[in-house]
Amino acid sequence: MLAIMRVQSFAVVLLALLAAAPPARAGIDHMVPYDSSGIWKRSNQEIVEYGLIATSVGGALWEGGESRLGRTFWTSVDSSVAAGLVSQLMKVAFSRVRPRDSGPPPGNPNLWFKGNGNESFPSGEVTAVSSIVTPFMLEYGHDHPGVYALALLPVYDSIARVKAQAHWQTDVLAGFALGSGTAWLIHRSPNSPFILQIMPHSIYVGIGKRF
Image 1: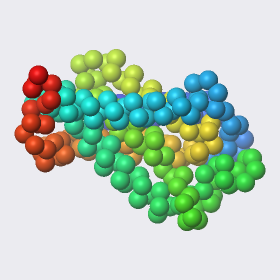
Image 2: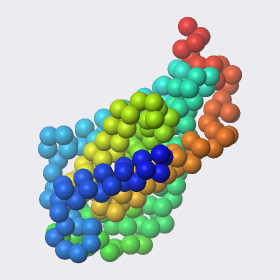
Image 3: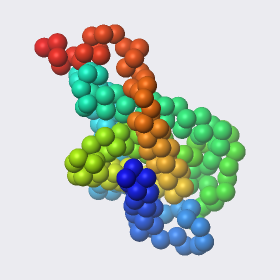
């Protein structure tokens, strides 16, 4: 069931990206026309990312680790921290040039290992969004299939980042795979949530239960 969900989610992201801007040449990496209007505005992307981070951390602190929901929140925190660290290391290691910095359209997606702050691969934002929502899909999707709609958030962010010419298509696909894959590994670990284990007892109980 989990394997099917991951394959389906990956397919949704890929198809959405290709539908948003069909490639002009062989391969999926290509610069699309810049679009920062309507739902694709940068401020809307930040609302999704920072809203999810705040919800994840706030929910974890409020709920604690004694309930199913609380443990899921803490797993989400674990996932976002771990995936974020790996993402940043990969950005520095691969130092890929962003589409908007790669020359005039259609751009050059083959500029890797250029250093100097080039951090296109993978998308850190898509990594964050997918790592936060995936634990909830894994935990509650079987009982409440509507939870799988959370997959639309990394899909939205993937398309938005490509439209902003901030990432190539493979950057956002890699971010989605990294975020969801990290969440899956942490979710299935018998020792998770990890960060919760080093928290004071008052945090484990949950702020909400103290009122």
